[in-house]
Amino acid sequence: SMLGERPVDICHWESFGKGWFEDAVKELKLDNVTEITAERYGQLPDLSRTNPKHDVIFTWNGTTSGVKVPNSDWISDDREGLTICDATSSIFGMDMAPWTKLDVITFSWQKVLGG
Image 1 (tube, rainbow, N blue to C red):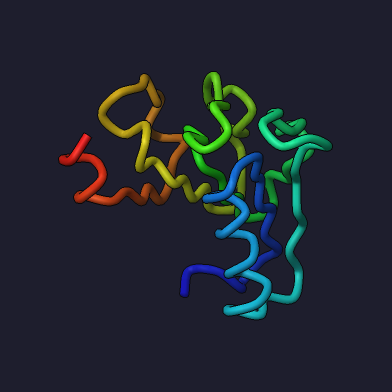
Image 2: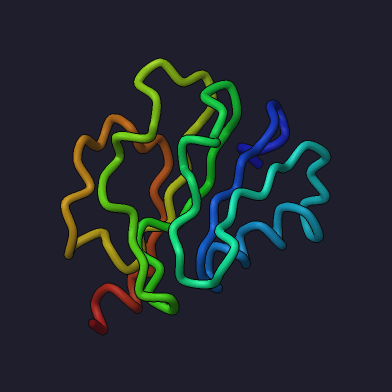
């Protein structure tokens, strides 16, 4: 696993991102996980709460809630941790530049090609 060397901040505002959080805590049993979420489903949380010394996991486009990250300005250029992005619903349909801010990008070929 790429996770576990440093603390992890997991940002979520819809079901897929929440799945990433639950897997990190329940399946991977990571010790130092910070959940960054909004008070109400479908609202974007305060992404500036992420710590540049931590790994960060987030879903770029939350299709189940209709909320997406507007840009990557909130990701520090001087970060020490990895930025892991679930880009399944955004990889070929949204501007995700600059790509240098995204260290690991995941997506599903079935969903991307099926759409």
